Every structure is written in structure tokens, then in C-alpha cells.
Amino acid sequence: MNDLVSMGHEVKIPPFEIMGDDGKMMAIKDYYNLRKATTTDHSWVWDRKAEAITAHYDKIVWSDVILVLNYDKNGIAGYVGGNTLMEMGVAFFLKKNIFMYNPIPEISYKEEILGMKPILIGGELNLIK
Image 1 (cartoon, rainbow, N blue to C red):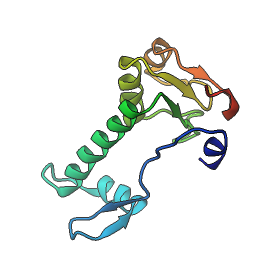
Image 2 (cartoon, rainbow, N blue to C red):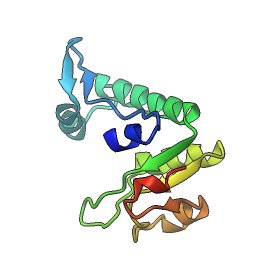
Image 3 (cartoon, rainbow, N blue to C red):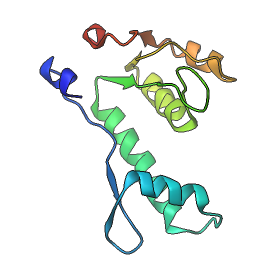
């Protein structure tokens, strides 16, 4: 993030904390673990998830471009998960340039990613314009 800011970009990133059911802030990693373990459809966890999705979409509307930090995950090089794919779709619909930090992964929805014509930067942040 600091590199992008030093290049003159304004940057919005996901939060590091989220409000728990008790009104206290909790680390996002703890929230992720709790969310993975939640089995009920009516948990407050899903309210926070909906709020997070909306907040990410608001950031996309605000932005000129998006940068997808598609690092290796789950044994897949350049992984793009469901949320990221949805966010890329919103950016594409809004005609925002989509930059991808790493190559497009070999994943079942690779064609959808290719169809959004992301700009692959190979880790070179200076290519973001």
C-alpha cells in the first residue's frame, strides 16, 4: 500500500478489524475463523459479511481502477476467490480497469476472468495508471 501511495495513488483497503456481536472490535482473521465455523444461516456473522460486500462495492464505485492481489492460496497459483471474482465483475460492469498482480489462475472460472480483460502487471506496481 505504501508503494502505491508514494506513487501518488489514493488507496482503500479491506479492514483489519470488524465489529463482533458484542459490539467490540475483533481481528479480521478471528472473524474469518468464526465465519468458517458458523453453521446457522441466521448468525450475526452473515450480517457482517453482507456489510463487508457492500463496503467493497462502495470502494469500487469510488475508485478509478482496482488492483487484484491474487497471491497463491489453497494450492492454486494466483488464486482468485468468489468474493474477488464478484468484485472484479462489479469493476468490469462499471468500466473500471482491473489490474491483476499475478497471472490469471488455472481455475474453473478462468474464462470469466479472461472476459473481463484484466491488465496483468506481474508484480510491477508502476504499471498501474
